[in-house]
Length: 407
Figure 1 (cartoon, rainbow, N blue to C red):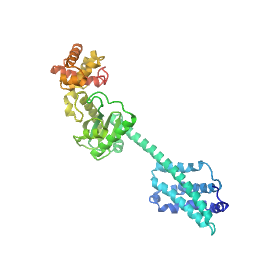
Figure 2: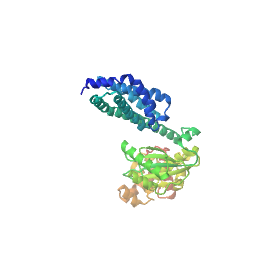
Figure 3: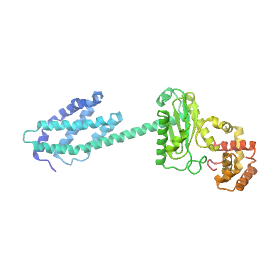
Figure 4: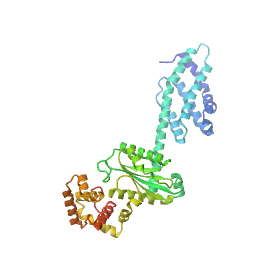
């Protein structure tokens, strides 16, 4: 609804005071807000005063033109993004805008003369009508900018943690200080168990939403368990975490994580005596996790002592390549490899192996006999069992050609 001539005339009386009002807002009115006095003088005198001046002029322009277009909010959006980047609290930013409206209302009231109450009400109505759009634009831009900055910071930190754990970044003093590491640490490798085959294979296919949800749940449980925010990486079904002190993981940690995620969780722990030793401990923990899964250990918290012999047998080298090559003749026979894995994981119990694979016990015997015929490995003998375990471990670590997860 168009303003009356009286309302327009009343508003125009404030036009000569635009600069005065802007300085008053930036240097007197806003000083009462908590935290505002700590801002630099140039920010108050230049940027905030200029924004206040723009806001007053924008209001006066709306008095003459009820539909000035959307461009008038551009400066407010730019300033909101700038304040977000500088770390100014959102509540302080919004309070300056709210208080600015009040100062403008005071100015209108001061220049109003007796008998202009109706015109004053029209202007206040216009002022309040436009205020919600301004606050919405400022808050939206601020939150978008903060979200983008926080996402950038998280990704940068993830890159630093990834490079540090992978050994591609030198653990210098600056990096260690940023990561919060200064002494011994505990490194954890975490993996989700597949839903269809506990203890073996690869995690089942997960949607990105499920991955992010489980990642957040795992990190929350780990942070709560160790009483601090851990360095944490999680991709698809596996992740790594660094506890910035020397400690023992609780025995029920796997159960806590499983309850939070809704699937089985397997954990391996390795100690790092110093920050520089964390990358090697990370590799050790990942290897312990892999070996525990290949050897059929139930999900839980695993340490090096749990797989000490298997860890030794899985080390690469000239002999390792020859042991891994023992399985080359069955590279195209995944059913034989699956049977061998399950048989070894079940402590060579042919009936339990048959039940898990949905086979007759005689079929298990036939498959193991065929495997022994093709490879020379006899998983029924102590030496054959040790060689079969070593061959599987070395193949899974990339020493042979049998595809991962084919069994």
